[in-house]
Image (cartoon, rainbow, N blue to C red; front, side):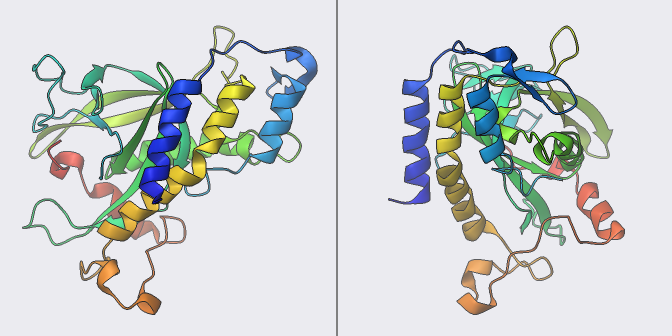
Length: 282
């Protein structure tokens, strides 16, 4: 069974076996970090064991996609109409969301792909988010590149005090992340940034997923989703300088580019300047 097959099976299992967030017995037992987040003892132990899962790389196939609708997007809604520009489009059910709340299961390492515009010479740096839309527990993958990467990296900085906390670390998948978009103008028209927001309640406390059944199901999908994403990277990743597909090289010469960590400031600026106006027309 391939990584993609495993990911699909995991998605089916999660959607069938999901429970509503109920069992929060012993909720006031453990305080999570200095932020005074309170969860049950079993959940706290789960957080400790899985603190680093999926978030190591944060700063096409038939897997369902979550995509931002742009003016050149081709996806249609279930009723045949066009989704609203700036909305999120979910490919499996052909529905749109102005905003969407997700759990991020993993973030891939950075890699380069060929630009859609054949006249452009620079390879495009991107990362892939795999996660779950919490309303209905819908699995997805999302490609993030260009100016949209900054929001993802900023989120990584916000999550780090939690995921790297020495005494009570919390895994990335346990956070409820809100997605929205903001438009910006460029020489070819208008595109959209993705805003990543850690969800908080009315008292400004971070909202965590505390249902242990939900957490176990999310955790069970990490390896299969990461394997599926790795297969996508292996099939599409190219050499940053030449654009040569890495899969075409001799095995012992293949080495995917590292993520943005470790590159120069100038290279980071170059990555972020690769605008989303040349994003694939979904």
